[in-house]
Length: 345
Image 1 (spheres, one colour):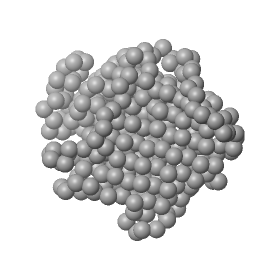
Image 2 (cartoon, helix red, strand yellow; image 1 turned 120 degrees about the vertical axis):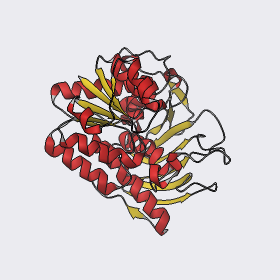
Image 3 (tube, helix red, strand yellow; image 1 turned 135 degrees about the vertical axis):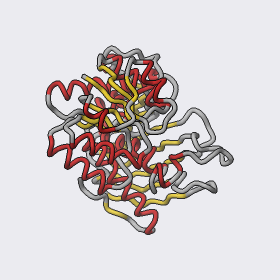
Image 4 (cartoon, rainbow, N blue to C red; image 1 turned 90 degrees about the vertical axis):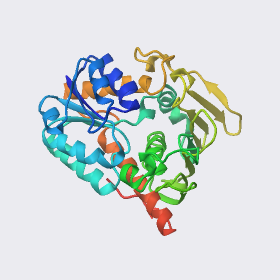
């Protein structure tokens, strides 16, 4: 399988490239317009630097896209229209409309398309998914994704905080994609309605640094928080589900080592007790490996297997578009000051 890497930043270098290489794919080339890092990345894998995206597409079977959010869909659409499989970073895009257009094109052309929703390959989250039936019907949930990558108000404004790179969603797209997908996955149904507030907390940023969301999924009601200016390391992602029979808490390892993931159970009433993580879910991976690479080894395995079998992987592009619908509803609710229904995909 010939892979084209699109983007040459830290994530492409430290996660995408070694995950695909380790899975036996051939890294054929790197396309990263204007990036001085493209050559070093290509040389590390005996690949070619492509100055023209169309030329890259002529010489690969699939692309792995790790670029600023605003160009995700244009790049993926061009690949799909040429019959190439797509491994796409989250969020899918900067609007639900463009994300839907990509999904429709991918499904019409029968290509394999995956959204890299990291928690779906987390040791703790997968263990929690296996035991979630113990909850009975879920009645409440709460969660947060708190990160510090923009915690310094004096630091230069990166692409994620600009409309030209991160779109209008800001942290809602960047971290919300993970949290909204994790909630929908463990709840067993998508979020259906949100009431949200979002804010730019430091001058110079063009999209939200923080968001608070009240959400509904069936009978369950929940509260979710997102922040990219949390001044504490390591970053923290967690989700708690309260059911009729007990409560479940998952802390995916999206910082440090993969083995630092954790799952807890509580009776109703009761206290948190840790659950053992299922070793069968490692699938040959080393749990002492850093987060990101550990997760992508499994996501890439699923992606390549789906291509081999001619089926869609999990999480597919469709799961990414479902998360995009929540992102859009949260942004619109914050701007309009009222509850918004999450549009169906």
